[in-house]
Amino acid sequence: MGKGFFKVPIAINEPVKSYKPGSTERKEVLSAYHKMLEQTIDVPMYINGENIRTGNTQTMHPPHNHKHLLGSYHVANKEHIKTAISTALEARKSWSKLPWEQRAGIFLRAAELIAGPYRAKINASTMIAQSKTVFQAEIDAACEFVDFLRFNVQFMTDIYKDQPESTSGAWNRIEYRPLEGFTYAVSPFNFTSIAGNLPACMALMGNVVVWKPSDSQVYSAKVIMDIFEEAGIPPGVINVVFGDPVMITDVILANSDFSGLHFTGSTHIFKDLWKQIGNNIHNYKTYPRIVGETGGKDFIIAHPSANPKQVATGMLRGAFEFQGQKCSAASRAYIPQSLWPEIKSFLIKEMKTFKIGSPSDFSNFITAVIHEGSFDKLAGFIDQAKKDSDANIIAGGGYDKSEGYFIEPTLIETTNPKYATMSTELFGPVMTVFVYQDIAFEATLKIVDETSEYALTGAIFSDDRFAVNVATKALENAAGNFYINDKPSGAVVGQQPFGGARASGTNDKAGSAQNLLRWVSPRMIKETFVTPSDYRYPFLEN
Image 1 (tube, rainbow, N blue to C red):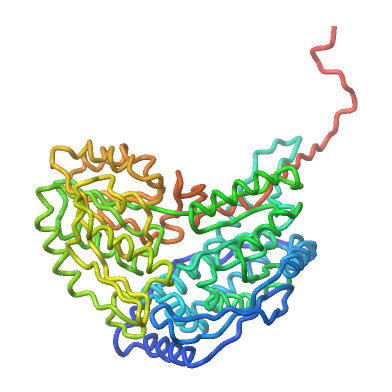
Image 2 (image 1 turned 30 degrees about the vertical axis):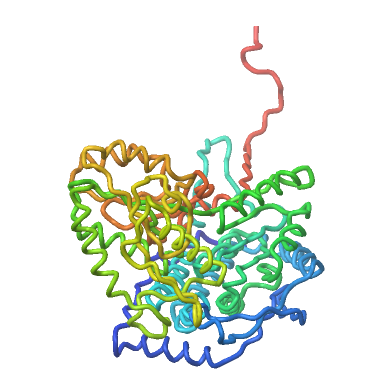
């Protein structure tokens, strides 16, 4: 063990670079982008510190140019998953006993590698394979990932410092043990930072991990593992597997040493995993920790006192950045009748200025959705809105997948507050607006609360503080992250811990100590200095 009470570097949020014309970062990321695009790579799995190639491969393609081949990745069979588990359990014997400052050093080093020499590469990989604009990639793949790693180390030390009171006669202390067994991380395509954080935060607390990234995020997952390996992650601590999610999950959840699931993805899949864990509960050595951040149907409601241009800007950014492929993206809006003409006019005008295309062209605000399945789903909802009498497309409505999976940002106005696109998570650049009578503000708050099964993010725009207060109370359970006069997306690590309730997840706030606490098992130790030697208490005396 280290000798001393060590202070870690004070965590600060990584500054977001501008990528303005002529800037060094602009030149570096474009150079990395084109260099990586010209290469065809072979991505192995990573088990026990070794690159595993099976010969069974799947191809990777940029969403904005699906005919271009980026490379291929290797797919696991059941034996690979079993090996990853046994490898992790063996690695736990030494990793769980490693002094905390040594674990901290690894992830602090990883943060600096991302902030420095790997910045252009991890941003470029996210632009290429997830079709993010350079600014969205910078916020996510570089800055948020760095923030997760830095702040998690600080949160870990805060947790360890949290100790009970003692007396002169007894010393009480809490030991924050890693979970017994191994953990399972399942990450989504849309955030490189989340993909890296899900396994990293568990490993930081002394756990070992089998990590299954999204098939649509393998390209940047390879960069993440390169960074972790260079930072000094020991073999077996984080094992990366690709392939059939059902097979992989079945093998993992059938293992008696399974101790925790860290999940970000669809609500339906998360519920199925929860059920599967429940069905296997008698097989496990411990009760598994289940942490999930899932879907959203995030809202903006404007009060008649709101600034119309601010509302419209919040809608444009909140709904259409990264093509609405954020679980926090605004996808339903409730606008008072008195403000709607001005807001509508501004929305239509600004949406006409959106440029759509490859993220390599920095003038493009919109790029492609992630894959054909997403494209077809969104196109189907748009087509249906064109047919329905209670819906009207007032902007956008076009789509084209001949070269890339491009969905035109689409604005739907509906007379039905329970219309399908007001209640169903679409995960794309489609926003639906319901216009309410000004006098029905409080009644509309009730509609907002009851329309969706989700409770992830939401926003109120108002210059009336009484209205803000009413909305804050009425929507208490409608969002885990609630925004006042701002778009309901863009939570910053350490500032706005992120998570949602209801069907949006377990609300174990990522970007805070609340999440890390789920990955430890406290042990209380009481040491008595002068031990009694007689069972008799004073009250027994005559």
